[in-house]
Image 1 (cartoon, rainbow, N blue to C red):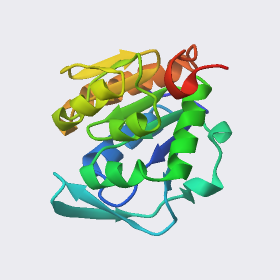
Image 2 (image 1 turned 120 degrees about the vertical axis):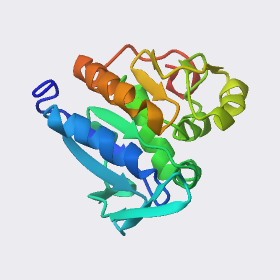
Image 3 (image 1 turned 30 degrees about the vertical axis):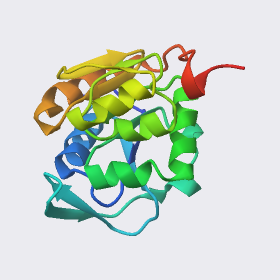
Length: 194
């Protein structure tokens, strides 16, 4: 896989409560494939990662605050999970604007575990099929998406997985999808063209 993503710029959005494995393993996968990843958060203050949502993991220093970057500067996006992380991100107007701009440009996105909460909040799951942590599936259906229980699901450049046990499959698939580049823009939800 080395060199598969040479020159690609990948944004990773996370904040306090991010599931550490879901941050580290996908980042390592895209970096090892030649991409340049950038950790973006609500601020540039160090963020506390968690393991299984309850045990403190390491702290990470973001490279940039989401308010200070543009979706135009990136080719793809990774949204790691973690209940607290996802719940905070979906309440940020800056995060929702950034994610919506990524989708509107057809850029590929990987979202794992609780991360689809942000996509639900931004009205980006309508008409799509995806998977997630089980407790989000009703939210996905209520937002017009189709929720399935599979290890990894790809829907027009959107790669989703259920939990850290799916990381190997998730990482392999995001490298593949990111390497394909932009996809046709989805015609429903927030990305609908006027």
